[in-house]
Image 1 (cartoon, rainbow, N blue to C red):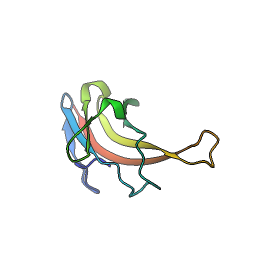
Image 2 (cartoon, rainbow, N blue to C red):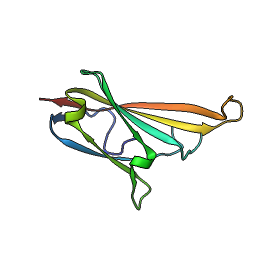
Image 3 (tube, one colour):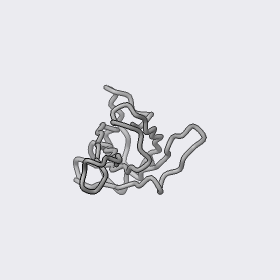
Length: 110
């Protein structure tokens, strides 16, 4: 999940801040490592979301995927990250099984 998010920590951010995240896809929490995934960031207050595909992220030298979020786009509220991993699985009709992880990122205030 997003490396700069720690379990139990609540971060308050002010509207207008541009957020940067580093995401590591590992086998922890997923059945296996996958190269096919997307990230969805949702704001609870405005019920808006931003979808970030793997292709839109930058891969750094430590195999972390970097992406940014403009809080002006999502507005105020709690921000949650959903990581959708598409795992090859021949038991599914389309050959892919979707696994989802969810974690709170921060709260954005005005």
